[in-house]
Length: 180
Ligand code: AMP
Image 1 (cartoon, protein in one colour):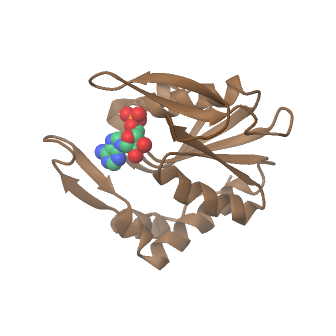
Image 2 (cartoon, protein in one colour):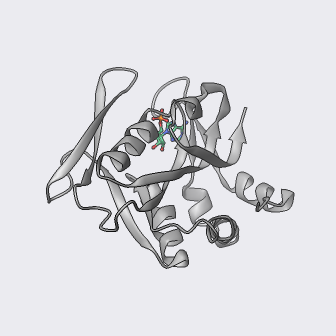
């Protein structure tokens, strides 16, 4: 089991900026652009994820549109495995499978290509920047299942613990930073 060193957690956490009242009043938006433009913090994070996941025998990483693409694609390259985008509705050009999920007002939908994971019973790590209510990640894990793959863990850079989003996810969950 790879444990994140306290000093490394501090480097990552302090690189993420809080933007109050974005995109609407009452939300504290966790802005990871200040992590991405900080090479020390970015490398500390990716090194940690590489250490954790190199023993998982993963076949693919699936990243959630759009910030999950950044972390997922880099980690996939480090682990020498494929990357699969889980996209918002209407963006993927080939035949897709879709899953709806509810937002505070209304619904959204994510999709993957039907042949996204060519290896049979593929072991997949799902990744996104943040888990809040867990609705997006839950939809993404069920999509992975629908197209015949196996989501072995869902990984987030940040978790808003007070929303208990992980309870709805049907796989192991790992978050680098927890916000109470
Ligand atoms: P949820 O489906 O409620 O877990 O929301 C997760 C998605 O919304 C992720 O793709 C996040 O990037 C985004 N998100 C939700 N809340 C925040 C927040 N406070 N700061 C930054 N991103 C957020």
